[in-house]
Length: 207
Image (cartoon, rainbow, N blue to C red; front, side):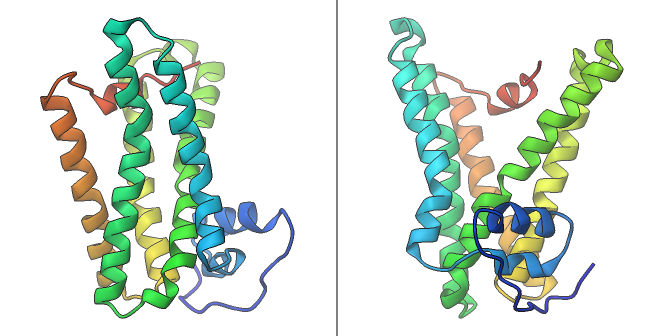
């Protein structure tokens, strides 16, 4: 695993973002140079989440009235969680005097955030092909989801450490600060009507 030093090999073209995700996902610090700073790059990274939320809202209005509220909640929760993490990370960069690095870090974090989900879906597909019965079991799905969550936490920590040039401890604090508000938000959603359980959705991804 490389150190926090960031070389100057910024690739150009459409390969830059996938390469950056691939490198950071493997613990290669130079991957951060594949992401551009600035508001434009940040909004481009946020665009897929916004698009999915809008599609989900549109599809929710196609549901029967009794299911519409749950559909709307499910549609906007990923976007709200993402925005929560962005707000927390920006505030923390101000505290660390790293505000100038925030847009590139946030851009890298948003794109890398898709990697655990892709890995989870691929793992489920492989499990379904190799052991069809295991793919349908709740224990197998829970194990895959747990592994994906652990990897997500590590990736959040690593991208923070590399992207904001922090110590490991500072990156750990950032990871905790980003995770706790999201966990509290999902817990409140589960307690209050319509009692949305995000974990059920996570474990419900199957083929």
